[in-house]
Image (cartoon, rainbow, N blue to C red; front, side):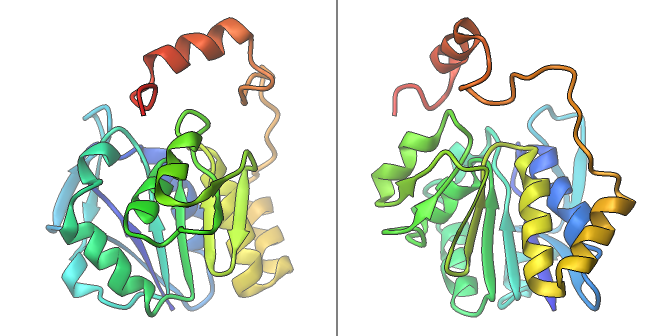
Length: 211
């Protein structure tokens, strides 16, 4: 099994690293970071780089595709090199997945039309432009398409997918060994729970606010 995690300039690090930490432990699987060009790809702050070991062209038919989001997603929405690869790779995948605004890239490639999907809460409405049905769920499965909400939810998506691919006990073991047992000091991890003033502030500042 080959798991391909897509990188592009100004991706959000946890979108890619969260699923990587979980799914790289899939028995018998190879996990590879891919991009248009090999070499380091900088995250959205510019302070961290992950290395793309292979080009998109060198990984034509992975079993699993993971597309992160991040501010750089906007610049990729009409990048046919990436969108075309997503469409062709999807023809052979067992699972096509995304984290955060990575779902907008799947949608722009035409892969989510008529499907339920999620994204970062600030970007949910943008999914409608591509014929997808946005939901506020943390992880959404629709056929072989698995979309996760914002950033940290990629870990939940990874565990969900690992359970499907390798069985519940393997997923439980990985959860245990990574000690994924969230106990956050604040209860403001969703717009329904966060103070209304904060939610409105970030809606106003969002790059998706005019979409």
